[in-house]
Length: 94
Image 1: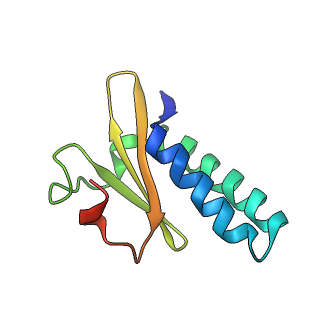
Image 2: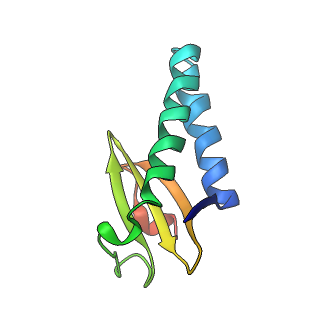
């Protein structure tokens, strides 16, 4: 199954990278690579993580470090919808 990134998720990655780069540019780059790899692994077993109907009917989440990946499962791909720090208010995101 393929893993695709929504425009909002791409923007989230850019914001996360920019924030980390303020203190450590090298770590920002490696961390974004790690997040992208984690997203790609979701496609191996996309239904392994819980649905979050309080967010949206088809959204699932998986935590990775201090961040949460929000995604939806489709017939031939996983769509990464958003990526955010775990302390962020989810209601404002969807």
